Length: 113
Image (cartoon, rainbow, N blue to C red):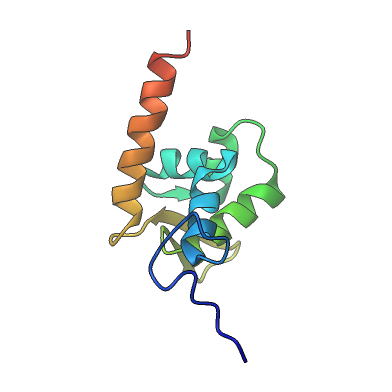
């Protein structure tokens, strides 16, 4: 069996590199907006849905799941009825990347005229 060695080190230019999926999850329209919102603290699903105008429940669910799987977002469930789930940035890399996204979004807002 032939092993693909085109991405032994992170290289987003390689189609087989796992970092490309993280890049896609972070830089798609919803990933950027979720990370931007979570930069200000922990939010419940419904709070995120209200803050991000135009996002569907399905897309928010998928985006949060992708960002959680990539290690950028932490999901915390509370054993209560009705269900209570909160989302926040992960300590290891979520906070760092959210700051970079904030800087980009801030620049775009300031220079979009």
